[in-house]
Length: 292
Image (cartoon, rainbow, N blue to C red; front, top):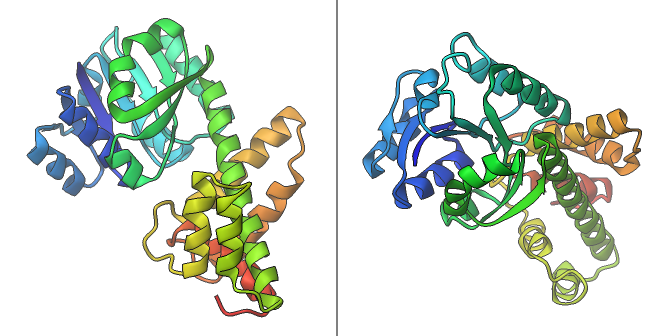
């Protein structure tokens, strides 16, 4: 397929690379040229303007947040000049409210819009092993299925309205943040009772919690080394806030999300914003009087 790709950060670069490997004709745009030029060496075409990426059969947007998408995509001439039969795939984690707004904007212009946020870290994206949450008109999802299949190992169809996929993504990130916090507090409890926390993580990951989330973040909490950020802590705070906003909109309280928000703010206040979001574990350890 002839496809554009906008946003070549840690996740986007891996996803775009998989599209090139799968034989798709890829036009890439990024605010800084370095990542785009790297993709060019793999076979992608670097375009100078955002709107140039909207001239194919589909375009994938992988930008950081609502505000960035609004500034890059909703600017003059971008959607208005898009190819008429193009499908716009938004893979970023965005708010439910903003996704609804994108639904309206695309409908007004007669453009197809599919939300396809992803589950996985940059190394998973680079391996093409992402889980993709897709929502939108079933016909539109079918049209871009070859792209979704190239970027991930499984596509989960959530519903016919794009914002439904964004809600599921927000919910899963809330669950991940909650798992990290619960493990952090459990590690602090074990250490205060002079128990080797490695034993705790060994037990939980070998029994009731033998899932990737626990197996990835449990050892990370024990190592206490968070400089290599698979997912930045500041973005974790953004996603917790998205969960709280969705909670308020629907009247579905998330009391623990409020605690998570405060703990992420605490971590950022101690200089952890650019570190992996598992660095929020340092808050629980610090409160227990423990060195991380």
